[in-house]
Image 1 (spheres, rainbow, N blue to C red):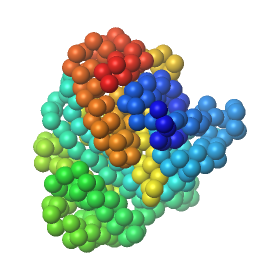
Image 2 (cartoon, rainbow, N blue to C red):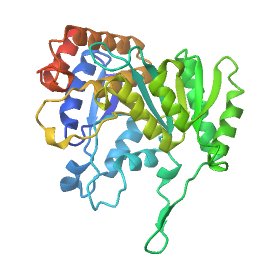
Image 3 (cartoon, rainbow, N blue to C red):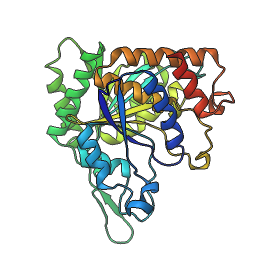
Image 4 (cartoon, rainbow, N blue to C red):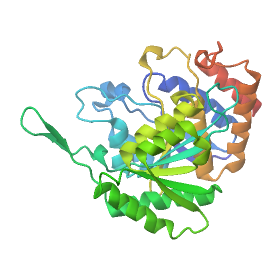
Length: 334
């Protein structure tokens, strides 16, 4: 069929090639017309390109506007604090979006969880502005700006409006960090005034952490600065079965990179052993971003059917299937 989309594919490190290969089988079976532009980044790119983040990777994403990537390792001694942070910074991918939705056959302590974390991706303590103060003390500088705060909160409200969500919660620690988190909260309240049809509340981050494990059904879309988003999104992943079933997206103005939340799991590299759901679900997010809603719904239905049947589950999901076998089973449902 005629190719409608050229999408950058970064297989990544560790189990990355296994899970992206399985995801590619599924996404191709959805038949929306994808041509993959495969590029290397991470530890695997150093020998060939001399850097874990070659400029051609960034050029490919800028050209194609959309990418799907596997997990990346930041090799020691490369000059990068984090390849993921470097990628987000280089492309100004300001919104990190991590939905957490319960899946059938994934056993957890919770049922019917359906949350979205919207995390500011460019500043806060993750800006990496830190230094030693003498030999026995270290100082990190927390950067919060009005522009970035307004931008991420507006994104959260637009996401809520687009997906028919009822409430947005701003998460902060403004009771202690009155200037930085106080500015974030002030910006959130001002933006919220422009969305009267959506309920708005704010919660202190520690109280919100407790609420997530006591009554996750009381929360819907949560928006917050970078550090809190990193922590709370892992709590949310824990509610639905762990990082192995947690998809993610990094969104900028006209550019988006979709990726599983989990790491590279290097001891399982090349073993075709662990489940590819987080990457496939990231592909579902990608389809929604592209406006391919029917394809997104069909892939979700296929995932649900395979999980319900329980025949092609990998070892981390209680079965014995290979990564590739699970991917093929989902593709066949399509």
